[in-house]
Length: 332
Ligand code: NAD
Image (cartoon, rainbow, N blue to C red; front, side, top):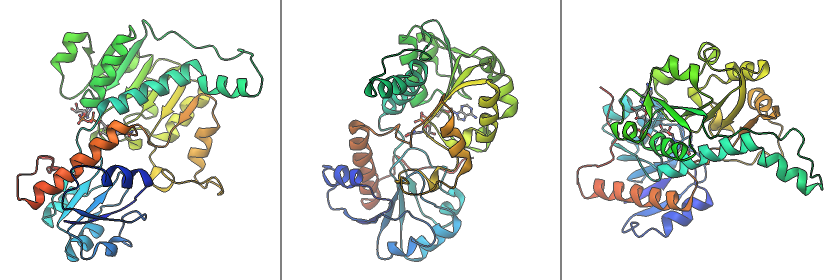
């Protein structure tokens, strides 16, 4: 198949070109993101391959279908950037990579917790300046702390197991409980109870209407003063302005985010020579107890290999008219 690959970075080319699943597919790599303006580049291609911040709204999907594109292959797990109803109407199947390496994201969430808590980023900078003072670098033991996990699917389950290994009490909330986690020591509870008891809250549920701004002024006020909030899932789960207010009053003690609601205009690009126009992220970055990483939870060698393999397998299934294992179905 001829595939138009949007939003290409060097690592995409490396891992897709070396994949043993490349077979007969021919990929043309475009650096530009996919949106209504760039969709015309896909003319003559059988499919498009896109990432988390490409725009697949109704207008873009119509344009793609109109120029002969037959399949949308997401090289990621989340699909909140796709108008699934429009894709369905246009008979455009959408495939994704539901699980490539849940541990990659779970371990990144832990990295955010440990960095914020033990302030290794600040210690590193101090020592490089010849400053070996440990003043203001006090952390806390994770052992015996209560960790709240919202969403115990693949990534959340992996995260729960790591935190149990630290000797933490793990509380969880999910619309579907996972009995094997209960057997390992995780306790499911209501959201309200989870907010009230949690020292470190980590978000691992998808961004859907029910979870949009799940972390807002009201839910923040239900949390323990000084709570640590970690979001490696999707930016829209957190009302960022409410989080900033919570940080200013100290109700939120620490915030670690790998995703941000307005990340599409910012992430995956070098803005070092520009004035950042987004005042919300600029304010966030200014807090000493906030850590922002630019959506790299997934970014391990193992995950990149899996993403390439599964995306190419998804395309092969479509080409060979085999039922699509990883098709995103319309929610009922
Ligand atoms: P998953 O589908 O395995 O798990 C999601 C869990 O959330 C499920 O158990 C589901 O029942 C639960 N859930 C659904 N609606 C809920 C609700 N209203 N309240 C509470 N829980 C609810 O997904 P996953 O692979 O574990 O991924 C989780 C999220 O992580 C994805 O949606 C994606 O947005 C994000 N993600 C981020 C990165 C990154 O690089 N930072 C990489 C991959 C995935």
